[in-house]
Image 1 (cartoon, rainbow, N blue to C red):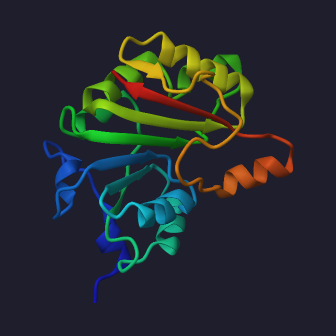
Image 2: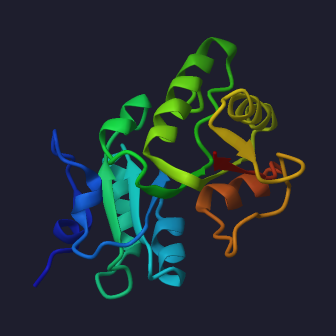
Length: 201
């Protein structure tokens, strides 16, 4: 019997690419920060011709994701316990990722902590190295100031453009919207999500 953790959780191996963890070659999509696993467990079920890698640094969150995954329903999903930063370019083959999803990244709202934000130029440059031309990055956040920061960082980077006429939308922008636990909790407090969608050029 396959243990779910053994099936889904992959440890990065230095010198090897995460592209190779699937037996069947399909387009690869990456979720950065899988939280409690709502998106990584449900969205891939509607996109069985794609492979998905969920990246999460918290062991507790990995366990939460595993509770929602099954070998039968999610054969195209793997989880990687890894802190994501500009070193992501070392984990995937160049120009091999078809899309990236980032749901509610930590906004680090205090000015002195802004340097800890994921969306920075060094990270965007690294992400661009592993993405295919026309691949997309979808981001959502309930933090208005961080949404403005994200847009500015992307539009100041030569590798991306906004697919949306107004870069920040208040309505979901994917073919299937998966509300995460965090999104629902924030809505209860009156914090509405902002949705952004960028293309690698």
